[in-house]
Length: 343
Image 1 (cartoon, rainbow, N blue to C red):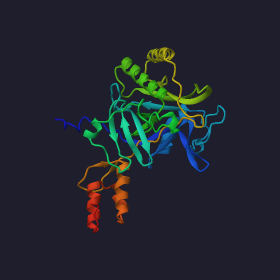
Image 2: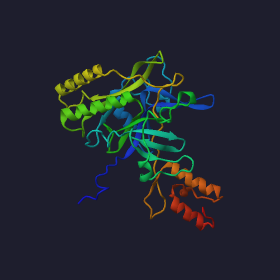
Image 3: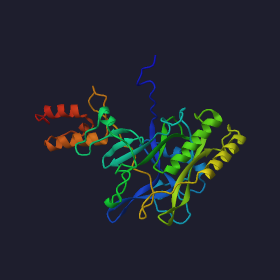
Image 4: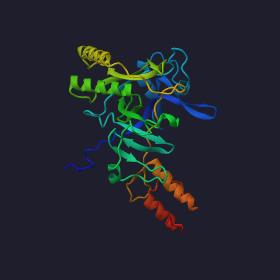
């Protein structure tokens, strides 16, 4: 018998992500720099040789597989990093792709995620003043409306830039890389999100499934007009892999023809970014921390961890390193054991 609330939940083990940019410094400050190729960011222990071997057959233009040399500004039309990723879908899913391609409006600040919504409902909110995480009842009284949200659409007179953005997180297996661990590609581009959504719907319709289908993620530079100026931005598309042996060539042609027809009917939207900055992926989702106490199974966001540690520091309590992972209840108990209390 299934355990309701547990058995139906799917958790993909993520070992790395692919980005379309990196951070660069100007005048002592960090700024995002977009590039039209994928830059991997993987956990310790990932077999880099196997990762590069999986990417190399699809990226003959890459001259060096030294990732550090990919973090450079683009010069002309030269591509120094991989522009194609061979992927397969790790699990079966159906629209709106809650498992393999969840999409939300997310707002970040230093320390992690502070707000998440679906365009109607607020699903997660942290009070930035005291680190309080809103309860389900409190969330019921909040609205997620990007047209009225000052984080997504700041008033023109404020001079502020948006802090909230679309975030689509695409989970996939890297074909050719051993194991069942997944990688992710995160994008805040509405055009890339639409492209991947459309491809998933077409694949599901043509084959009746997604699990195991060999596909390609491809990044290309698209031309847009922003505030009267011509600009370029990297856009990601997904298609069937024509080299895959167990895919019918006729199905591949049908897929490409349907995709071209859909793109002709709906031209790309202008990319919304500021003239002095290139578009780039948003900050990654906040890491969740497990409470260190052996009898506690709570997961903590970065904001909650920061708030708990700040409380301890305000009381002058010497907090051991592992206490960074205690929830509020057990951190308070730790403080009381040292002769202090937060009350």
